Image (spheres, rainbow, N blue to C red):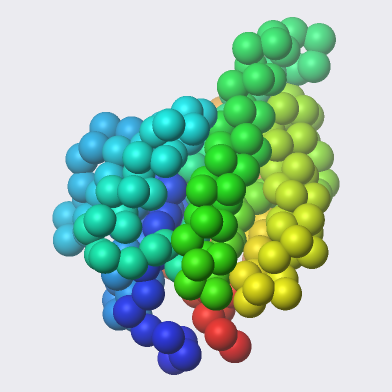
Length: 221
Ligand code: NDP
């Protein structure tokens, strides 16, 4: 696949591991300038990293400023991937369980999109891709916080499209099914087996397949 404008500045939040890392590597292999955000500040091998805590607007601002300084151009492609789970049945879910997940997955993506839009408006082009989840569309017991945060990304992206689409800035959501990462490794064995039984292909997806879908949405095609 060839993108119309190779060598763009791409920022992937939570790109130090799991799905984010696979996405970041895929863009780098295609010739884009990629920076991942990490909370520890440690860069994965072969990639540039900037520190970022997505629940903190000042930290998001500093991460974008650092990325822009690194490559000398605004972020043209944002992949809002950072996310957490804090599963609990509704009756037992604390305010903190709910707030932390929504603040990271939904408000965190909002903070990044708002900051990214500044540079994209100046550039007169941009691509935002939000990593949602199949759980945001189907729901899942024990995940009211997570499902609400992931469903919220859909309304947010559609609103951004309506606001900025005329400026050549697109916003899209990818809602993957289950993928083998630290997040799904933490699930109890019986939950993993139950999920698997509902997947027609009979297997979890590979992060690289998702990365290809994200790159298509970030392309000019
Ligand atoms: P991982 O748990 O492997 O990685 C999560 C990433 O998010 C890490 O880089 C983590 O940073 C970062 N992160 C978490 N909280 C914050 C925060 N407050 N500020 C900044 N960064 C943060 O998850 P996956 O790779 O599995 O998931 C990536 C995305 O894909 C998530 O949004 C997830 O909801 C979504 N997803 C995953 C699926 C799956 O099956 N795995 C299916 C559908 C969607 P750190 O290393 O510092 O903890």
